[in-house]
Length: 171
Image 1 (cartoon, one colour):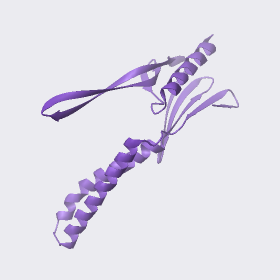
Image 2 (cartoon, one colour):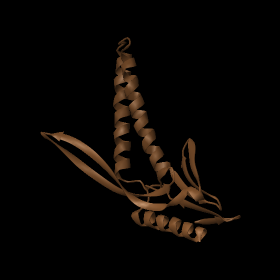
Image 3 (cartoon, one colour):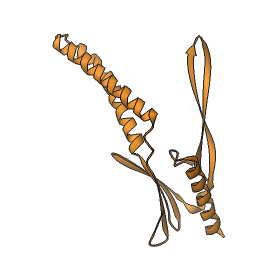
Image 4 (cartoon, helix red, strand yellow):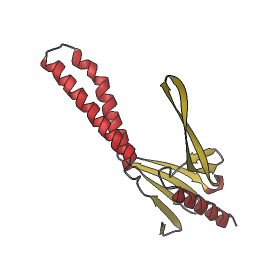
């Protein structure tokens, strides 16, 4: 936490840690691109006319997987609270996105459950449910998820900090 001049509080969330899913996606995307490179090279060497053009969508998918995985690892998040505004900032390679809300529109923060379903077909259909708990800002215009890559303890701390700050600010 960094308290700057003028009563501005800036909280930086650390980057997500490299985990097995990042390594798996990275390895798969390298394998994918390698396979596409060999296939494209073979079609060019064999003088197969327009066949190399069929590899373009596969190049796009492989590069997309690689870039998206890299961006998810390299993304930083920041929460900045000034006397009149609360801002959420996502800083990624190649871009920065800021959501700013006047403090009088911020009702608080809370942990909410996000439910995701995955379906697999193995003879019979079954669904796997993944529930994650993430911090949300409660704003008049809706809710905004933030700091989703942090540990559960950090998520609970930031929610408590925001609620205590707003309670103190409003008296």
